[in-house]
Image (cartoon, rainbow, N blue to C red; front, side, top):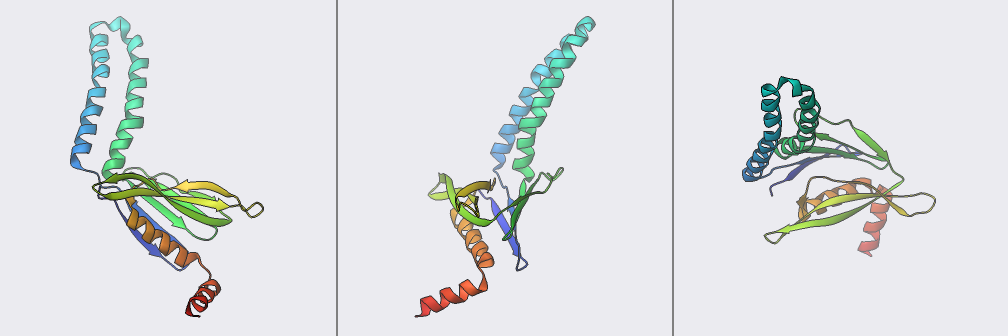
Length: 186
């Protein structure tokens, strides 16, 4: 797995671009499966061509099959070829959208009171752990954590820790940083 990220900051926001890089074998296998899913559609088309009176019986099932093929596996194939996840994090909100190169989803924004993060390990491959970064909102009244968002792209655990460290350096107020430095020096 060669997923990677690019981070930028303007002093207020942390901008993340998480990129998918999958192996060619997986992409080819998924493409073959998608092409095989079109076989029933071709069979129905051939049957309706032989029997024109059954054309009305063909249209509805063919539309459903083609729709399901486009919605699920083709979208997954495009995501694995060109997928990018864009995230903008600051003290007040998390915004994100997904880019499929041809199509981009709308930017969604989640307002937060106090941000919390957690790294969830999803899989291990050749001794390297991969995971997702989960974001929590701590409610002002109850101080209870509420899950609000998680990254989609699996990244190396070290990359996730780098992102988390950059995020906390950005979000920690200067007064707290000075206090922590003073505390550690003494």
